[in-house]
Length: 324
Image 1 (cartoon, one colour):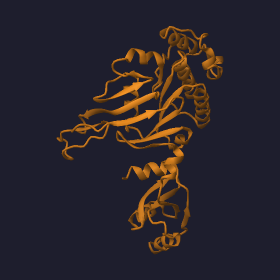
Image 2 (cartoon, rainbow, N blue to C red; image 1 turned 120 degrees about the vertical axis):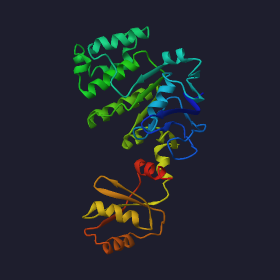
Image 3 (cartoon, one colour; image 1 turned 30 degrees about the horizontal axis):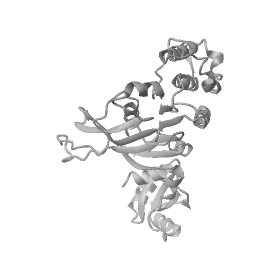
Image 4 (cartoon, rainbow, N blue to C red; image 1 turned 135 degrees about the vertical axis):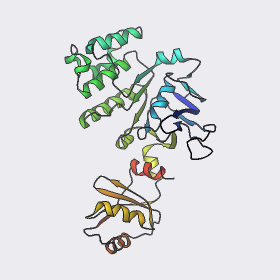
């Protein structure tokens, strides 16, 4: 039995501002105007294995939080079915709430309570004690224990993150849901946090984590790339990268703004996006020579041109899939 099984789940919202529908599950419509009537959503389907770190990777508004809220029984889906550790998210919501931990995107603990008081409160809610499950949170809690008398609202971002994780773990959940847990956290704290997650996975806890940071995708066992409520691909990060069939080039010149426009106008370009101080160009012709591109750019008036063939990342794969 999988830890999580989701079949054709969809959840649709109507935006008064845009006059359009959005949500989880691809929504074909009768037209592009704001009066279009939504047809039945196709929904999303995926499974999460026991004892793995499964990542939902995508930008803000992609549908990650909606999926989390459905699986943690906070909202109902419009269609489809889902189970968490064998319990139905509708019929068995009380059992699911006992067996999962949930760390929402926003810091949601009681800011006027101290670190110690927050932890004790959440232990009491789940009819347990800090002492009973202390070994599970020990490696995390020892880092904030010196500040246990400090109010949660006065903690740094990294400390708030550790406290929220400790509170989500205090009842020893089978599945842990973490919604963008590293957003706004410094790079050192992000690295420490992922180290903690791997340690929890090794203890048999299934972890489902969402993030807009593509570099964190490689830290998951499997990932689902999601865009506008639709899954683009589900696989291991390594397999997704292997399935990138095009030649990928890193390109730079003196005029980066004009360079992006000219690269996109080239007939050989499949797609092109800005990546830091360079542009990544996908070319669907393996026989394409970098010299041909350099010649094209010189004819366009560019100077100090640098063209290098590179290996794709998960972010490159996401950008490629999102254009299909």
